[in-house]
Length: 180
Image (cartoon, rainbow, N blue to C red; front, side, top):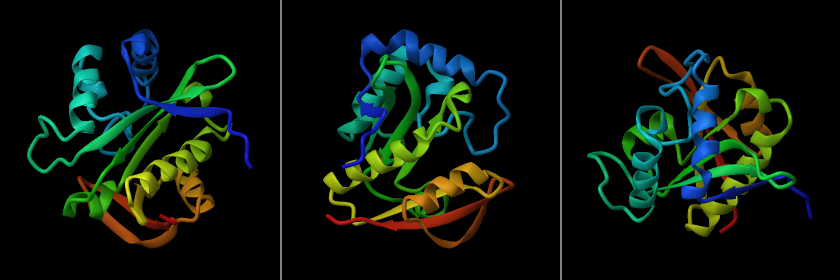
């Protein structure tokens, strides 16, 4: 069995400092997707307390905005030191928009933690979370220019399913079949 350096955990109040530091790391990043920090819900536009409440509500399908689906928000934590290295979100179902570009999952890795294999580990662990929800075929997408994300998706079994345009950006779409 593969050993992972990270684990996906549900965010709690004890993660406040790390989540706020994570958010700050993106202050100088260029937005390449539809959000500055993919895979974290509305973190970039909310206080930590607002975001945490939204995470808890959306996980159980409560207070969902129009056209949203229940979603489970995780943070990726390095096992050796407990440091937050990424975010990962599993959307429990698809809307037409999510099938077009968003997919079942979204994720990000802190700028200072990239190129260490964390995204691949996160996607593998996230696919297991999808399996637990009974999702047999997982839609994943990435901005066409995001070569590292494409490589992660393909490494995890993603089968290319064409491009789609949204908000002036081109997205590559993939399906990943998983055993349920």
